[in-house]
Length: 391
Image 1 (tube, rainbow, N blue to C red):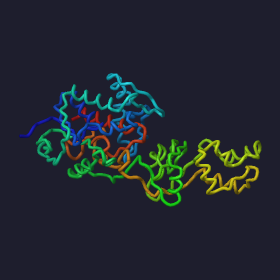
Image 2 (image 1 turned 180 degrees about the horizontal axis):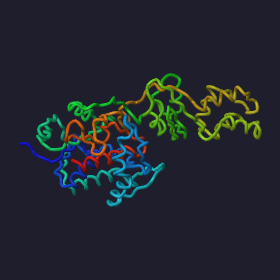
Image 3 (image 1 turned 90 degrees about the vertical axis):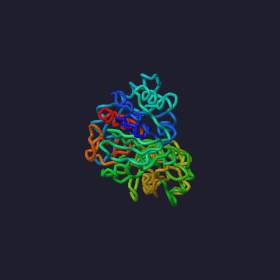
Image 4 (image 1 turned 45 degrees about the horizontal axis):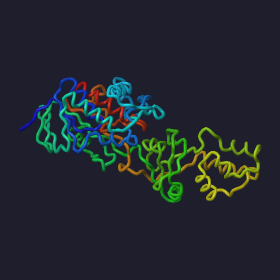
């Protein structure tokens, strides 16, 4: 027996839940399918367990896409304040951490439970542990699932990307797009730590756990924290840069943003000529970093004894520190997947395929990827509402 629905949404993550809610509110009969045993698994793990659910400063410039204009329509019609209103209606306490990043005061499950309550109120039928085995085009769509056959007029694909496969991430949405003749742009891991090799890796292991406010550059620049790990480099600055970095490219880190190390040394030579270089640098940099750099690159001398060449060597080592990453940690730890369904194949107003009427793609499966800091959730909410208002 084939069960009939107006709308079927595949994937009960952030985008899928939101789209099902919006469609259900419009009186559509909605079936929401999730292959995992829980809905919203990436929501639950996000933000250190407190869910960085949006960013107050969201603009189209905070997203990467082959077509940078595609995201504008959806983002303008569903803003961070729209989602905040939903959060506050459910009595969920929240706070701004920094740079417009909004987090739950308590736990990420508050957001998931809110969305599930909204689904229930909108009459959405949710099926967990329900993989989709096949999708056929028959007037509408017919889906063969782990819990029987279902059919619908409108099909929404909200299956996410390839990041964090241990949480069940797959390429199903991309495969489905290809099945129906849509173009899928090349995929790669984004918002992901760098791996190092050789001397750089040796340094990183010795500095594992050390964090520093820096400016990271690779065509674009981000000022955030850098974190050394036993595999390489992480922290917000590195994660941001990784979405722009390509294999073989050099990256540059200004370890003293807002300062000029030459001026710092020159001032010390005038006012504190007997201070040791190591001591001076430790006033601005983590001691472990200064000690390692001093042991490997500089003999420890008083600043009065430094030559112009010595000062230039110190400056060039710190502003900027340059290196070539060996690679990234890949999808295993990546927060997002870059690339995806080509936005040329979709309506920016509705997220519907321009080739296959009734077929929609939303969220991470689409070639729209946000910066770190709540932007990807805002794209999930906005793209979902755009589709939910049309299906």
